[in-house]
Image 1 (cartoon, helix red, strand yellow):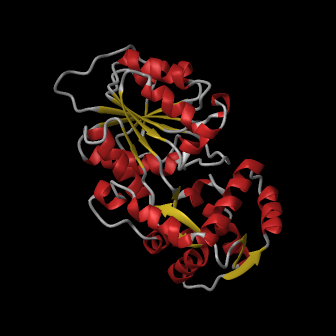
Image 2 (cartoon, helix red, strand yellow):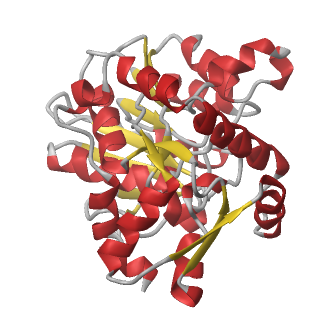
Image 3 (tube, one colour):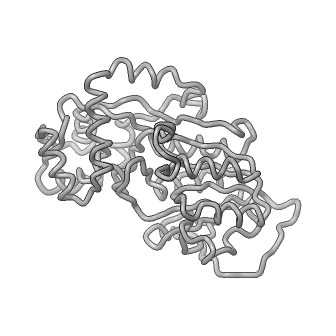
Length: 324
């Protein structure tokens, strides 16, 4: 069911008895290093907030403006051009900041602060601390985080690993965004490091649960939450999909060079490809160490969600229709 269209209206202040109003932002899929599927996560988060009795508004770019849960107010626009839909910030208590860019994030925060927003939860990326080794003018995720921290509002950053549902939006080469098409057409997946490759994944429902807690409670104010799932073998993910669909999937292991060429043909930028190949190589060489790093994170994902992390088997069963 679609959300409720929201049209420009005069600024209004909700009554003291009104339930909290959360503004979520969603952008069209970006083929960039560290991008998360903002719409996939946002829709899950919206359902959770609405089920809790809160109000939800979303500022969504055109390709993300549909299919929000019933009861969601939808403003078509972009968090990267916030002044064009400044009214979207009116009356908001919290902001789930997903898809912001360094060039305009301070404009976003200025509008939120002027509207009385008290808390920002940032959907960041896995590992932006590595950007500190480079000049500040080159920062992306870290620039967004630092701007939020300097905004004067309460803040929490969520740094997720790859999201299982990125298959649906195609935000990262290693997530398998090309798999539905090639499995449907050929019953085949071709990828570098397919035999010994691993990548850490978190289910979008678990990521939404972390975001809900950060928005609705003060438990994680001024905290960086690493919502990282365990490293999953590429081969195991393919086997999960094969079981869910009831059809075999042929796996073709490419050399890194051939994998790079294949991803370029699919339109992935070089920075995303190189980060992906580096990560796959590192997980192949240091799987035990990197798995232990995931297990050592505190609070753990299970601590944040109150349940064991959802599995890729569960994700594959839910989305088996994509591969038929």
